[in-house]
Length: 424
Image (cartoon, rainbow, N blue to C red):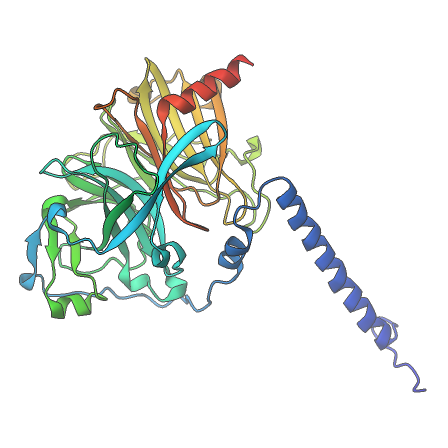
């Protein structure tokens, strides 16, 4: 039997140190397994395997090298319109209860777009074309760690049918991706496109890149079909949407919406509370000054909008927000996402604040509020007025993880749920 070797620094036999190392590793495994079981038991582990792979399995190699845009000769492009886009994919509709007792409708992307790790969906808005046709527009960003940063962002144009069409179950929705480019027909490398809103004939996309805080407007009169050579240079995209103007902002715009009652845009800033892989909550300590919302008038110019007064202390890790008047009440809706595993939150708050005159929807101005749990990765928010069938507005959102979906609720349904919870 060989004598034990002694570590001179710790005075511990080396075989014992190896055993102690194995014990420490086993203890860590037990802790991790227990934590996952707790998450599952609490209902916080949506689509666990897919989401865990998404969270932990991303490629390395993003690096710090500046990504150059890809440009094509715009003189060979042909101007077209959303109504003339040749759709080449189909989403599948659903109708289910994502919130207990409240019906939701929406669709799942095709298999390739639902599973791709190269793109992630972020923003959602409804669109009316010049011909009166109804579309949904969804923004995606190309992921740097997958080598797609040079592509910048794309917008999916989805045919949605007539106003208030409630037949989602088993229905298909044709769509196609269009690539976003600037005035020079160049891509927008590393843009996150965290929010998108349709207003006054244009799609307005937020740009939260450092030193470029702005909203980029893309007129629907600036949809172009590329020739074969340009299409090949643009990563195979047949259609591009060309930027028409840039509106600098004094606040970081992680997302955007439009309050049609106030005729004001709403932007907000994402701010994480705590470590990336830690436990995320809506605790008061996380409602920090950096969690900002702002209401402002986007002038048709390239000057920084005046009188932008950010409202800090909002919900943590916001991914979307919008405001609306409903039954003579001022409502603010906010989405918060806590990664690929934990449930997202949809916050609904009735406030006494006069948002149009710079008052902030702080917690002490709240008349009623409720938080709904939804699948991981809830993103942008958008309200659509539905006039043809007498129902209230629809609230649209989407998820970026797991089996990605675009979803909607009746505003009146979630307001009723808030009122009922307040009366209990």
